[in-house]
Image 1 (cartoon, rainbow, N blue to C red):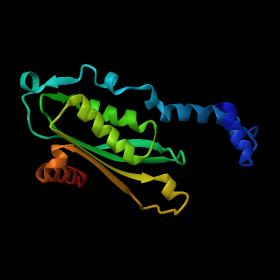
Image 2: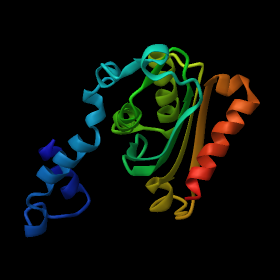
Image 3: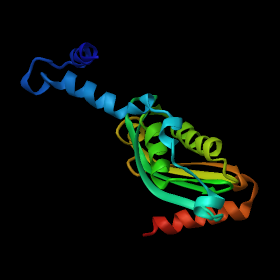
Image 4: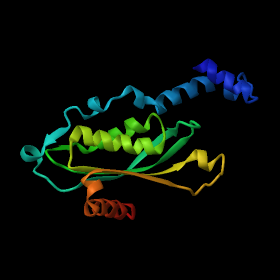
Length: 188
């Protein structure tokens, strides 16, 4: 990868031998590997030993919401960052999951080349498939550097995506409760 990065420096008109750039191919390789480390992770491994029975362990049947989860990802179209907040809610049926595991799922999927729409759906579908709640909702609000620093150059633009599954899709009341809870948490 270092040789490719070195060639990119040459192609944009830089001298990869100047002092400030000598170690850049190595640093860029390390950064890219870090920012895409989600490819080496799986949801099954992340959720292992973190599912708890509602009737035996937790005795909880109301909505669970984890909001304002910071994330950073890279757009697959330009390989530029996009970043923001993820809000996740689910209505337990037989299982609940450790709270850190939701943040870890967000991290795993966001540390891949992405589009925000897919990222939103992947988080929701993985929670639905693994926890099997009555419903799940995911909302992502993000700022995209490909919109801010190139192309239309709109620095204050923000994209919002949502995925509502199960009771969050079927019930306007459940969906409204989730959206109300995350909007209240955003005001703090």
